[in-house]
Length: 135
Image (tube, rainbow, N blue to C red; front, side, top):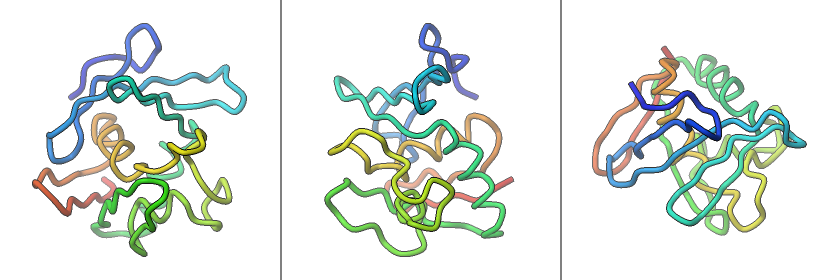
């Protein structure tokens, strides 16, 4: 389980799948559009708040393990990965879940640990090439 309740005053305290980096996330439902705020050191990333439910639903559809495929915005995402889905024109938001230009990538890095903490997925914790599947 994770620490925090997901508010700005009490954010979720998370660790990337390999366990190499800590970060926090919290909901900001009053933003336009509503966002998940991800704080990694001094860097702030923002994702559509619907990413949690949408990613879980997509993983349920996949029915098996899916590679995370985390990549920076300027690098291509490997096909069939969580990262690729988080950028795909046919996902529920019609493109990038990341909202801050220049920092829209790494969806596959930061969202799956949150879903794991919320009890929605199972996540591997290897040094590289981690995967996720819906519970």
